[in-house]
Image (cartoon, rainbow, N blue to C red; front, side):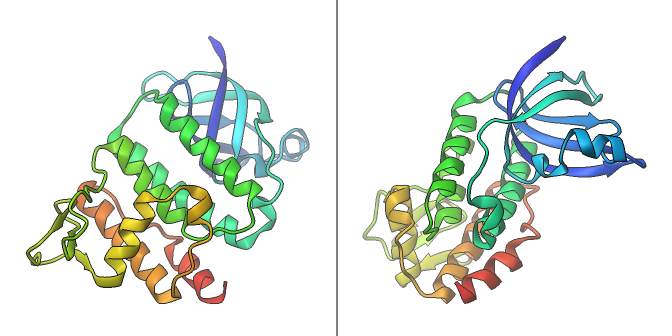
Length: 244
């Protein structure tokens, strides 16, 4: 049965000589994998660009849904919302490559089915990123907001406590043995959680602090998701922080 699907591309891998397997987060079915046979052949390249499946591209396509342990098939692939800045801005490309890795890992571990609210949240924030020049701590805000959907959103009700315990996910008056945030970083962490995207894009902090916040966010995910690994694109993102 063929169905029209809204999707967010998460990645792709070559299969055989000319086919492409793409992983997408779909609004209707959650995390799905599809095969495009002949996509990389000379004839296939004329019909459809591989750039359609760049990380976090917003797509709409007709698909034959995959059965258990079998890949689905794609046809009539279109851009749901063509980006006007993300493909041409190195900063934004680095951010979406990083977030695609994070989102893929989270969805794979949580094994969630359809979640239209999460899909719409990601889609709307990607459109926001495409429309705004300043990035600020966009990537960190997305990461922490994802935890709302996954069940380990930081509890910062005791804001006057000197420590945030990454393992418990709560503020603490006593110093945790390992994995905690304190001082200026704790203040930034709390501020990010309370800001909207307009505010987060204008945040000005030291590059070293930006790197440290990201490192702690990754530790936080590792502590709460058993299979989570630091995204491969983290180093590239941190290098861009140093020059932007």
